[in-house]
Length: 130
Image 1 (tube, rainbow, N blue to C red):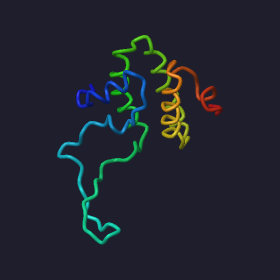
Image 2: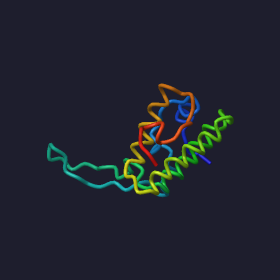
Image 3: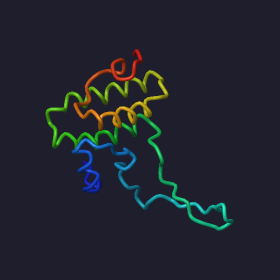
Image 4: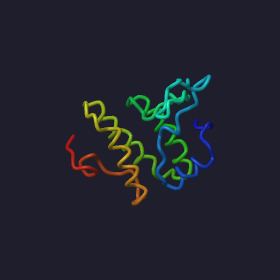
């Protein structure tokens, strides 16, 4: 799991640095399609159609499993915390909260400042009540 993730990205994960989860998506077979568009100068250019964000909690969970496989190799004592964190985000998404993706980004960015772990609940982390 995660064999497609570049070494530099793996190192950032292990060191607790923020990594955009979109970078952990496995490459699409055949690559992403390119669209022809006209830019501001009237030139025809190609535009990448690769995803810019993770659109579903299911896809986020798939990518978080890749993140976890890499992170937990270096930090096995954090396993329970990370599983609880994943469950917390999934609970929020499954209850219909539309902010689950933004919450994850915000939380992981904040974790780069305070790398103590993934512990806590949504109530503790962002003042929301589940």
